[in-house]
Length: 179
Ligand code: 5GP
Ligand code: MG
Ligand code: MG
Image 1 (cartoon, helix red, strand yellow):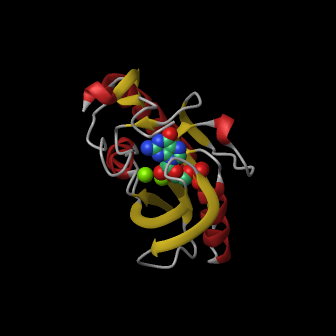
Image 2 (spheres, helix red, strand yellow; image 1 turned 135 degrees about the vertical axis):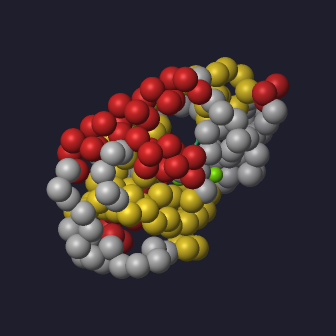
Image 3 (cartoon, helix red, strand yellow; image 1 turned 90 degrees about the vertical axis):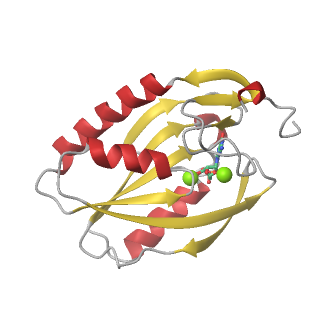
């Protein structure tokens, strides 16, 4: 698997340190609120697991699964919900926990949905941000790392369902995804 990685961008240790920092900020910001972490499957599964343990507050966890249609490495804005929240977010201070923001289509859609379902507040925590890909404006309150243009995998993020279990995050060789 690692032979498919062009460059390691963030090591396991760097990711763990950053997740701990984000957790401490979230703890300070959400004390005495009604925090609900909403993880986006499947890419954010490891981030949710680590972040939830780094936020020393009572909180609830739920997941959504949304798919965006595109050419395999980018999205065109058509979003389908495959798995919705188990319970309505009404009254919760929702923090969407996302692996990576690229075009912004997925998060713009999710934010609108959660607000329409009467969440008390809706913010975004993304581990990775790829600002070069943005097509619609989305402003995450918490960002772990900014990544360059290119396709990254690892720490939950896949290409064709592979690489999610890499403990680090790296740039996938363009020849793998046919660029
Ligand atoms: P959007 O373009 O809607 O902001 O991003 C939608 C989803 O596409 C992300 O949540 C992520 O699952 C996937 N995605 C975007 N950029 C990358 C990337 O560089 N690598 C991987 N593995 N997935 C990405
Ligand atoms: Mg995602
Ligand atoms: Mg994917």
